[in-house]
Length: 312
Image 1: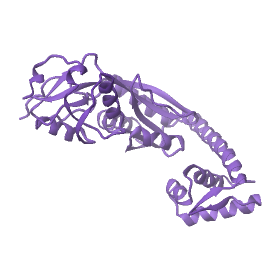
Image 2: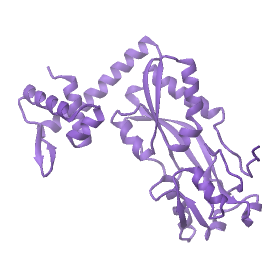
Image 3: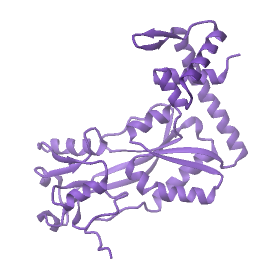
Image 4: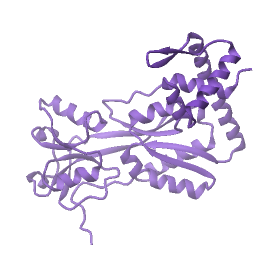
């Protein structure tokens, strides 16, 4: 009979493309991976790996076995989830990944509620952008991923993952209080065609949305400063170095000298949770999703347009 743990190792090698990658994914040493593969080769009587330049490739037999292993491991996860559902206890470990503003604006309240209600549940948070969390979720390194997209640029979701909408998050324009635009009640993006922008690096979802929308208006975006943290972007706005498109979720703290002006039409991104469909029967997964949904629906941490209140 084939050993399940050895199949898990082969699946990790196929998924990551290397022995080192499999070792990192499984949190073991490379020698442990090599030993398991050697034993699996003895079990099936065929070679699993071949040299290819400086790397390796799976043999035809290994590729066939890895495909079966993926289906088998999915079925094992489903069996484990069904057994956990039968027990009904919300226990064990759940790993959640979320992009930065969701990690800041949604997760603290949700995690606090889970810890209070389910003291035997160990929920761990990691901050990842969707392009990082999606593959990690699909290969089983995560249990739940909080991701985002735009209605006109939907995020492709791999087969085998389920989704639950959590919230829509509105973006406003942040400008210096010294900027003439700070006196406006509402702005249109077309009025900001020639604006200097402070934003995210190229490749980030929000950066790509802004640049594509400006180009649709016939303007070449002038992103003069980039920063991954809202606090840095807002500090640059307060210094009068440009405008920024900032979501309401997780916006605080806001420095003095910044005013938020709504856009018309208001840009809104969609925030949703993803999980592997085979893991859903686990009470721990269901409890985590319910806590996220409750937190989002009860009013996530956001900051309305206008000038932040003075702090004492």
